[in-house]
Image 1 (tube, rainbow, N blue to C red):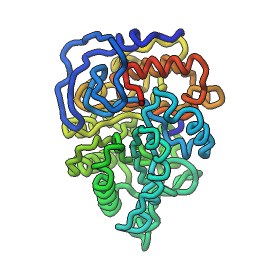
Image 2 (cartoon, rainbow, N blue to C red):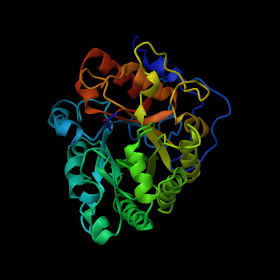
Image 3 (cartoon, rainbow, N blue to C red):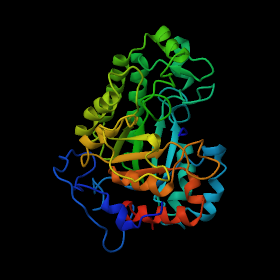
Image 4 (cartoon, one colour):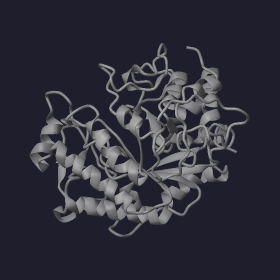
Length: 396
């Protein structure tokens, strides 16, 4: 996704970790009562072994390349195959974005072939792949993620925002039932695949929890379209979000399942939505994360990576309370808001070393990084990835 100083050593990064506790995937454990400082001794653990250096040792962990077949039109795919996959041990595998429309082109009929094709280079290198299922497109002017049959004969309404993709009416019970049925089919198909690390399911646009890119300030044409077309309210969106969490919990899967957290317009407070969704998810073993790592200048070149502060002023870190409340219960995931390499930062000031250190300081153990980070090959990027891998795991 999209909107996305000096390098510390591995020991310094791990010194930022606090309260490491043991737990299993999909099993709730109490967070540690007191902070503890640990250091990595001896060789780093593998991407697939139990990891004593993270908050949930038995859960998925490591650094994965995000969606290389779609980032920049797939321009990095061949470069990754030539110089990174199976050659750079800091890469644990790939996180593939799977469009619902491609996987279920007609109702109840499934086609998983694109997943097998895209995962193949990573499987040949004995790496893992994660599946990120999108029920609707995030940006653009065409929704190519929601299957056409969902809208056939006006089953589910569309919300047309000016200059944006037409979004589905997520609040419609027919849509929710269709998505829940797809979730069940995907978990049944991949829940026993040992090469799959985890599965993340979208609540809203993309694989996130946004009800479309609704504006936070006036003028609000997209927000107004949602209100006019489907009578959207924050309370209704929260109910939909909790329904998706319920659908995941009903699967009883041994595979780690996950949702995203976001800041939602018109919520009662900055932490309200993330707190509500995580409170429903964590006790049932559903993991969560965010695709906005780097907002709030937390990883700027002059920043000092540290655990987030929910009392800090003027910092829109909507996930902070949720991460603090549920540390050690489920694994946390981060995706940066942008790549950190020149030409891809989109105006954000983000230092790769600070970015990875900040994520680890906040108990994240799954990082979905853009392909550019591995392809940069400069000393700073290489050293930052190696240091983080000492905590999060190394590939074969």
